[in-house]
Image 1 (tube, one colour):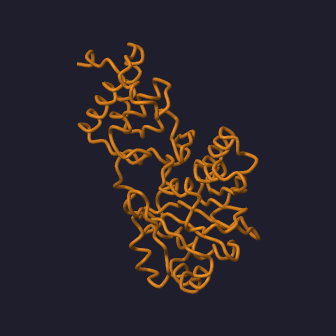
Image 2 (cartoon, one colour; image 1 turned 45 degrees about the vertical axis):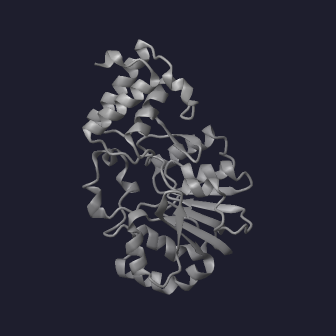
Image 3 (cartoon, rainbow, N blue to C red; image 1 turned 120 degrees about the vertical axis):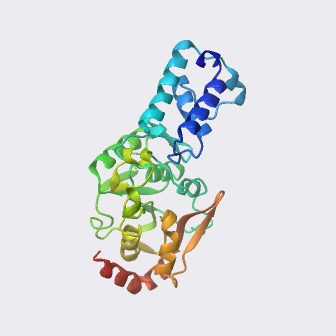
Length: 307
């Protein structure tokens, strides 16, 4: 059957069909079988993901076809995310090294980075920026690449994740402007103040982690679970951020599907839920002043949870 697969587009179509038949789950940088199949094919061909469509009709060699089909088989049999299979993930237009030391880079925050966080920053001056729960370093490094005048701190609790982030910072030539720090959120940042704090923390309810599709089992659980409702880390960030935001600073946090639970817990906090090209994705922006005003209520919630 595979003898009829002659071109790049033949292989991409075939892989997508096989993935759909196998019932694979997507969401680790790609949202469809077509896109994930294309990533695997282009990796073998050593071609960028944005080549002109005319090249899709190019014939493939027998060796290339064997390599592609082997990756397809592993993706189906092992349910390993494509980014881990090829060791690469694209985020904010940049290529990052990706492996099981950190979550596969994926976040709608990439769209905000490419847009300079406007209009939410409102052109306010930014010098120092913090990325909490940096993982592979994708958010911190992308900010440093796209905003050369920003000095970025990147924080994570995992030594493995920080090692991967350091490799990515070197690969993208921003190691001098991205400072990597091991800290449990703000605990190791006494006295540090930032104009912009960005975070994509764990936000999956603990009970949901065990029923996630098999692809997620290949990722570190530390990067996924966050208490019974997925909000333990987000609440700690809301509680402690006022001490680390400049007077006119901005906080941007992704909470994903835990958005409704956060609004229910803090109905009076004026979160701005950001609208992306594909709609709302559970990312809020909050200015420093209303964040400070919400501190008593947030602190009470944290105390009740023993945080």
